[in-house]
Amino acid sequence: MQTITPYLYYADVDAAMRVLADAFGFEETLRYTGPEGYVSHAEMRLGDAEIMLGDPGDTYRPPAELGASTHGTHIYIADVDAVCERARAAGLEITEGPTDKVYGDRSFSARDAEGHEWFVATPIADASA
Image 1: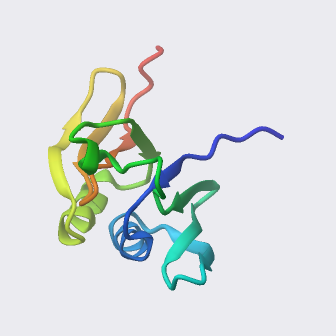
Image 2: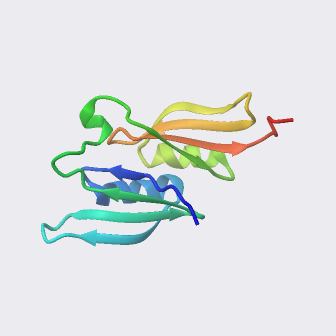
Image 3: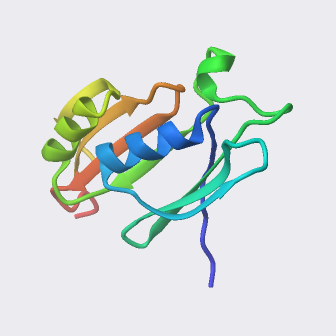
């Protein structure tokens, strides 16, 4: 078996987990609260996909702290328009509203409070044909 799992650094993992659940429907599968009292590692699922979240510690920074985008996480879902509204209601900045793309997706882009970029799409056509 092979999988790729993004590990996203958040200064406030607990808040990020609430937003990602509200915005995209991620479900918490693991939460580790360290002796300091904050969530230092967590895991969430959306369908068969998984993400990990962790406290940045001393050597890693979330994108907003760096003042730059460091990566994007792409999600395929069933109803891009409905999820865009959920994401907006959860407090994400919608950087591009739902748009039909030439490569066969309908997608939107969003940025969360700590600067992580999210790309959400629904396939609407077979672009390879």
